[in-house]
Length: 473
Image (cartoon, rainbow, N blue to C red; front, top):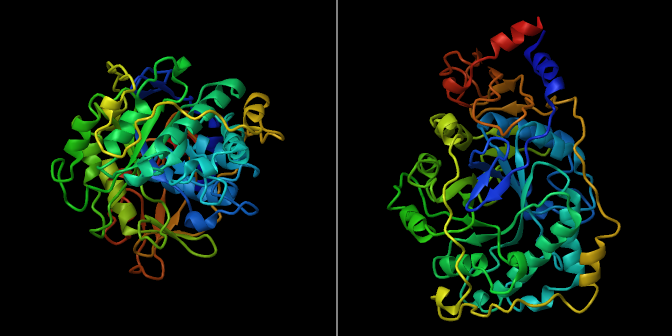
């Protein structure tokens, strides 16, 4: 029996759903174990923003591509993917089910780069109306029934200058309120809503204070962000906890009452990237305040951040950054990291002008009411027709594309290995190699000396699942 077939046979009884996570104070928590959840994430938008159209496809509408990418990211050790641009009218059941089987949660932006599908940074009131809200609610409808939907972002870098901070914060809180209320009215479980901020220090900590403070008289903190993501590229090359200013971030967010994580990281000012920040992000220097982070990004685009390159036929090359990242993850003690328990959480501060230190930043905590159009009707009655998603049985995890490593060696036996919990590095190690056109004419199997087989992953990660295979023969 070939190993790929063995993996498929092994997969059949294991296609259970991962446990929906919860926010407990400043921590993500698995309610089944009581343990904290650290995000080991990847930002995922093949084709970039140009790859999204309202009448075409999105990253979670092509099952074959999802099988390919979920398997690759599973080998890497990813447990969460962030998708920026989604079309709520497409069917996402198979892709969501594939990532679920791979032990990966979904972080979803409700906005898109198209006109009418996002708040504008300037004069945000001109983009806050019923059609826009209907679109954001439709994203919730499309994904709320997947157990691996972790959270929604109500905005991404809406505030990135002092000028955009004059009115933008109150409108981001308004959208956060509307999404939270929609989820409470129309979802069987509560799904957190948060904001993803640019690491612009002039407005960063004011943004965090504004979005996470508690407004007197507001029932259930309706407009308060449940989580706070940070898009930060301050760790470049072989930096340190101090020189990268990560130390300043930990100190600045020390009193956070909500979970904080890197929604993007991975500076490329120094290439190839070293990813030395990985060891620090998941160390006790940071885990008391941060809950992991997400590498920007999966596919190579014009901005040169990718760890995987796709050709026009969907075949993938795992770049040298992929190897480096895999090695950094493999060096960590994930059993210890994932067994941490939540600690005490500071109380949310009361919203006050005293929280804001930057002149020109919004100090108005009277959050705009819903627009006087059909917005409130849509909120109460729900989106119609409502796109409904559900986890489905997936029996085929075969990868239909060719995957090669950075040295041109073809990756064999790659398939999603279904798991019943969050993925960790080492879960999927049943791969082998054959030399490709740019290889050196040799082949190697996982776990053997790989100096002649390309880089792909360090040998410690590549041990064939011989006992599991033997049971099937």
